[in-house]
Length: 365
Image 1: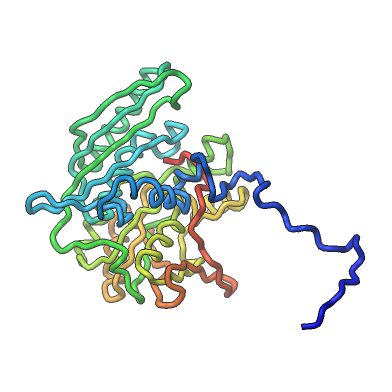
Image 2: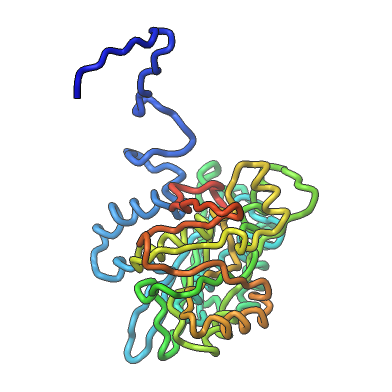
């Protein structure tokens, strides 16, 4: 190619490329010598922290599968085992509290392996100076949520940290449950043609937390969807035990769960954007704040990949259950673009629904 000489006037010359290393931005970049909030958001940064720090340090094959709960075998029993920590702010919000979250979050993680939770442990980390009445309210909510989920809190621990070194109340719960024979829920079982079903409207929990935290009003109160999903999963498994994978789209929302499944299964996922159920109030709030409901956290919803032959019957069973009354088919697994999630828009276009880097709304669980 012959050499060329630019005749563009200097005033019209393209600006120099920005110095990326000099940028400062609320969205964290990948190379970090220190932990940032995005590392706890359930997106790409969380995955990098697990893969680069925790998994190599712990060793063993169990951490190779990033499921909501681990499957362990003791004697002849298949057990699901999960743990989660809850640092939500504020402690009480429309539709629930940190106590409800501490139960339902772990119960639902176990349910995603097909297990019905049976026993929980509960650890409280309390900040010096928090009102005892507040702790009592949290404990009462936790106990009521456990009874509603049919699970027993059988052991626990309490620690107190100095004032200024906590945020009132943090809770950790761990849980176990039995996995029924014939149930094998993992993303590696997903195949092209599987139908993607979501159990109801998305984005409610994240927007509910944000509305009370920031004092925002959207003309209608948005309540969290925090609820146990064990009964819904049992209703689905009663139709067929040949479900392929279940996930509860908490941190990182529906987008994070679908991207994790696509990457682990080596399939692509195509969504029909208009089929994804988004409550009007959630959609309006997200539009005002520049958020995408696909990335907003849920605490009482699941997404399922179901063989096409069973999809209609599973969907009917979900809609017959209170926790799945709003269930909808939103897409399918495909052979093309493996590991990638795309959405077909109402205008006929297609957009990539990527894995979130961190979390749009920190401290939502």
